[in-house]
Length: 323
Length: 287
Image (cartoon, rainbow over all chains, first blue to last red; front, side):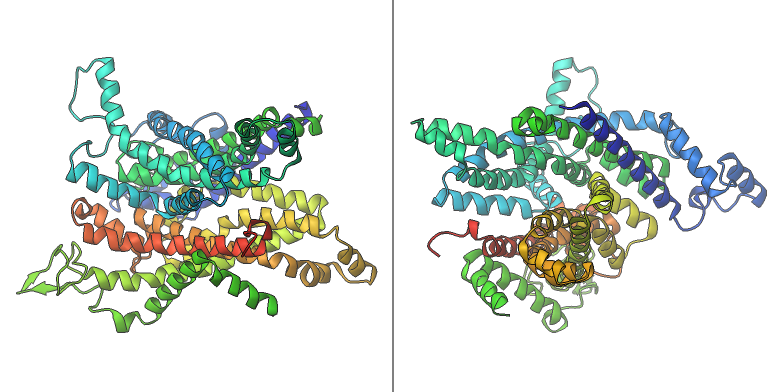
């Protein structure tokens, strides 16, 4: 890939990040009233309120507050949590780790399994199996993820008792070996993982099927057939090329996954970033809520950048054009 | 308008399209005539023999049982179709309107305007929707209008990209050159010559937009920031979940849940059927 392309893409990413940060700053200034009114009890004297406003820099003009906010963020200072009384970063990192444990495996599996299923459906155009597959994936897509979660909890936890209710670890289980801890977390992970997979896979199936259908008329496939390759081999060539739209889609999927993640984490009481954000808003811990959103947006933007860079490797036509 | 009539006919000819149109119309009828159909006042706590009818399973009295607060589930589900319909249709129309205009202007003008608008679209794609909408609504206060505004504010992004790429290929076509030569203004070319050609695509995005917006509203309401003055399906699930009723009271969870899924799937099916109409490549050879 060309250097200039990479540089311009990175510059673009920084601009996007900057715009999202600014938007967030504006968003938190939309709160009716002053941030002090949010969590200071009314018992403070006006002089004390004034002192705190000064301490937090709220007495300064808006543009000064804005530059300070940007400066602090760029140095990795996300502020101090109102409720945990700790630096936000310290609260956020374990939550981010928990979110990724749930998200990365389910997205990867959805992409791999979904692409295999979708390309196979597309290859068998017009068969009964294809029709069923399409309707099924449409069905999966239309089911809100929290609903699937609630139903799964109802059946597998409350009715059958096969899985623990929410959370990530068994509460009060101390002195476990490394292996036992791994099993415990996996046991808690199984249900949210399954629901997340189902939620992501529908779109991947639909997209890879469509892109496979578009492959069917391509000249290089006709050529492969004319060379006398077996159907299996031709299909393999078609599949390799049908993957590219799936990669494009995965940029959208990652953004979309954080939305699903918020809902899933709430339903399964999974201690990740999404749940942290929802809980923080409920208890008016705005620095944490703000940082959680910032983290999710950054993850989406950076993931988009990485996916963009991976194109060149996947589709030789694109990298040649760029050169 | 012979084309539209033919398109509608083709949608209804498709079993999926037929199903989608029929279900959505049923929900519309439910929403309009809700006061006549509902057996009880959806917000009124019901009593049996002087005791609050808390979490009653379905019976002849309450066809779909009662909620944690002793309210009738069936009546709530019926009135809930109003929120789905209002948010679904209005947000879908707004986001398609914004997306089509941005795509049209970006594709037609090209150059700086194009790259500015497309960077704006990239930024919109960089914002994770549910977290953003949750924060915005939690901060400015929950209401059905805020939900509609935040959906329209962000979800135009896909429509804008698709419409732009259509406009890019359309503007090279001879009839546009002809219009230019005959002295038509840019505005006239955009809105009189190009727009009618991308409208079919825009209509597809209205159908998809209905599905997205309804899902978004349900998700946001489930997070507890639905309009407190209106009953929606997502909000019913929120209360079922936070009161712990969702553990066993299937009659409280399934009706609103199935309604959301049915509503969304119908909108997707209309979209799919419509796509087969406007994109003849997807149509089967012998139909």
